[in-house]
Image 1: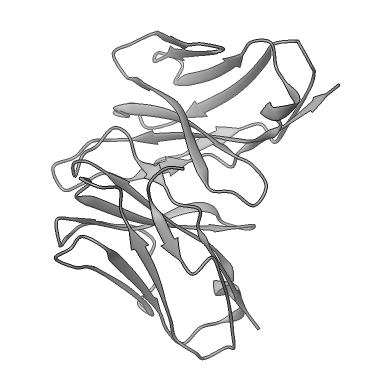
Image 2: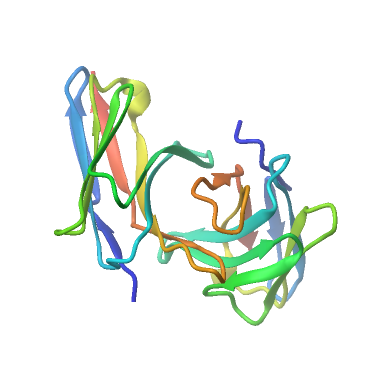
Length: 113
Length: 113
């Protein structure tokens, strides 16, 4: 079945770059997403990439996709304390019958001043 | 603010009871998804509705049911509640049934005592 894996924890110093990694098993994944969850809050869609792309950049966020290795990463440049949160990788396979997101377990990012 | 509204924000109820969670999707979105977030299971897809019809089903228990009404709001009904049903329940919406971007509400935190 579908599976999405992430490392549990990442600690980074303010101003440095953060890289959060994700691996997935379903090679037919069509869209791959990054969501952010702050304490007590919902899931905020940060960015997503279509499976025929290798890279997408959106301000401080860069998403890299390696389809051969089924590896997705999110790079946050100039990490700020406000970036401390749990980051979820998710994939979806678009089907005529509908689509669902399959989430990883989340990576808790702690930004130290 | 994602534009997806969930009520109530918090719910405390006893085992064996029944509760209804409500979701109003973003204006213009036809598709509604329900997810459960718990400490042991992570984020799990429950069910998807598109324009009033069930489109995809995930790990939804038989004690749980959902529907989407003509005005496109959705309700998730949880019955015969058990302690293990305590979780954060998220609703998300997207424009189409195969939408690339799904926007999440703030969630309803259910505590079963």
